[in-house]
Length: 187
Image (cartoon, rainbow, N blue to C red; front, side, top):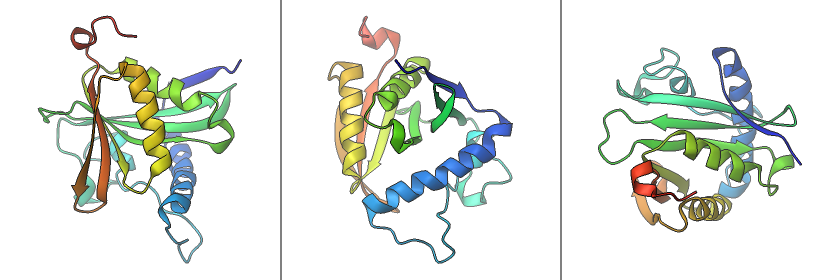
């Protein structure tokens, strides 16, 4: 039996998450067909500092979130060992979406062992409201994972659609509401 922990990341954990993001991008590169950068170092998440503080000066001005938004960075540990991260974006002024899974990564060693499912369900339970989970159109493994996890979590009560995004192309999106009043005892 694995001991899985989902721990809210502190400021001193920023560089750890930043380093893990490079492995996340590397893993995505195989799925998405991205080439390795000439310097041999995969990039990161442009809005990563926003998860620690909205309007963070370390974030490029074009990537800063509006006032009222908030980020929640989490580290994942399995048996006290670093196993991944999750970045949750809370929208302050969006009438349709309260939360979004910004980035989610479980190290390969822990994939297909229930760790990602546990982490996702734990985070969904922590934040109640209207959720949106997006995956790139070519990222079939992520789509399969999120559809299974969300279907299980909501007992199939979610919307699944594909929408075109100007920067990223087709995005697959799952939407659901897990507020206590909406869930009526589910889970």
